[in-house]
Image (cartoon, rainbow, N blue to C red; front, top):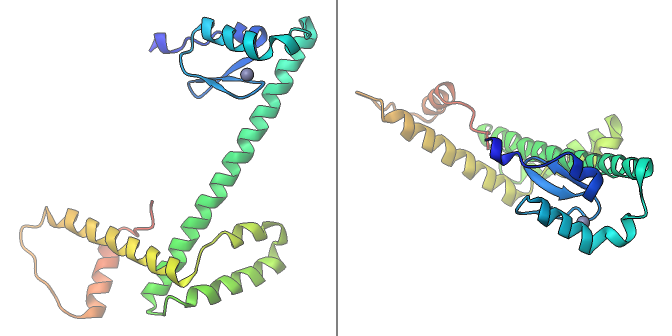
Length: 190
Ligand SMILES: [Zn+2]
């Protein structure tokens, strides 16, 4: 493990490089270095940035590094925020599709639900409108989500059935649905 940690802190000031999740990345152009050796890092700096950035020396150079690092961190947080909200939108799309399926409503209800959500969000949280816009509820999307959920339930059922010693099948739609939803985890994990 020790050998993996090859990044040296002094590279920050020397070559404007930082370490992000095991990757060594240029703070100026954000290119990553595949083989984190000082030679590669120095060569990148020499060929790409030395001309402009050698002008920064001493305290000013340190400040410049910190400034670039802060901007870079801010950008990363922004991206992870976007990813988080799009993941939440997908989750919401699954949950609503599951509700449509369980209540035996047509897939096209998704569009109406989306309209309702949009109207409510305009009133309650206009600054979060974009997040609601991202929830896909077209008839096709709802159909896909429900198929995914059904596949997941089927997989769970097959997995569980491996431990069965005996089993009986009770036919009756309502009873089957109840049994399945009681004994299986809600499959909207992805
Ligand atoms: Zn660079």
